[in-house]
Image 1 (cartoon, rainbow, N blue to C red):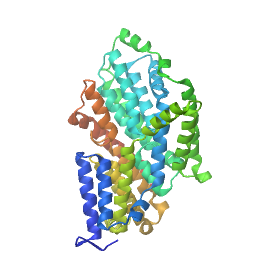
Image 2 (image 1 turned 135 degrees about the horizontal axis):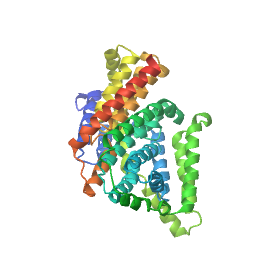
Image 3 (image 1 turned 180 degrees about the vertical axis):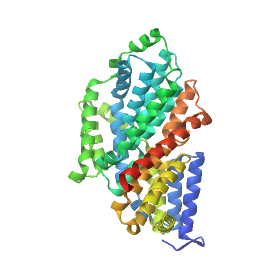
Image 4 (image 1 turned 30 degrees about the vertical axis):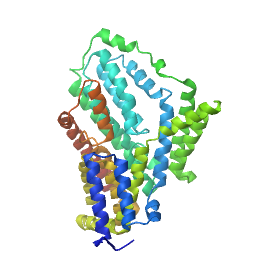
Length: 441
């Protein structure tokens, strides 16, 4: 690495590149993968990073985990499993509008713990429109509650939200580490969220017996498009989750487990097909990978590594230690609040990707990894829950707004904000209380 780049200190040059990159990402005027990759290439051409250093900064465990789970979820989706669960749960409530709200919200939260949030809402929201149209009721409370549930539910596990994948991979945390430390607060937040919405909306969510009968006539079995694929997908999903849970004991990385699951499911999915059909289905499965997200992560890892090798993140870490006086308690609540606030305005992925090496650099001065764990959990909770703060706070929010616009039920930024900001603030307060009781009382 050169000490000077175009006459500018290499560290500050890296800061300028990352800052410009993040500002462009914030405007959403250009594709985020293109922006991140361009910034990474500029760092290489400027001499801040060598090509080898740039590639060494990519966390391939994270990339493998993302790609593997995208294939598994994409193939499983073809079986109709997720729609079946939503319709089946709805019928169990006897098509009562409030009961449906509770069930769809719970299903969204549960699926989000194992699928990415965008996939979850893409599966649940169309079913929601179908049901609310038959009941002839306002879909708005269902939609915003599903957004909140997707972002909160995804916080519960290692694979539920990209920030958790980043944190888990960087710190080599297990699937059960996230379940044990984050699922309790997620469950509390979901109970309070659902209970509050039921109290607010129960009187306005009314329909006729005829409309409820129309919903009860829906056949959930018709949602299952391929029973054999359903069995194969459920079997592989179960084994993959079991692999995640036992990963710390068998000493195999989560990314490898996800790729193994994807390969096995691909084998089962294409087994017995002729050569042409097998190749076609395999190509379709690889197209299920969101390559924009994959290359965005690659570019992001490289530019953050540029900040790391120039020592700028270490300087930021020292500033953070000075600001908090080296106090774990102060650090925990500062990270929780600031990450929630920033993640409601900007993409939480680049924010968390930048924060991870910065916080890692502070660990020796703060008492080591074990002492810093409250801070790491605060980062996860703040970044994931902060996505509920605004309509642009998380990708799932934007997707639902787009689907609602298409169906003739637009969700404005301000209308969403009125509901979202209190939900985000309350969830962060609950998180703060949880972290205090667990670590500092």
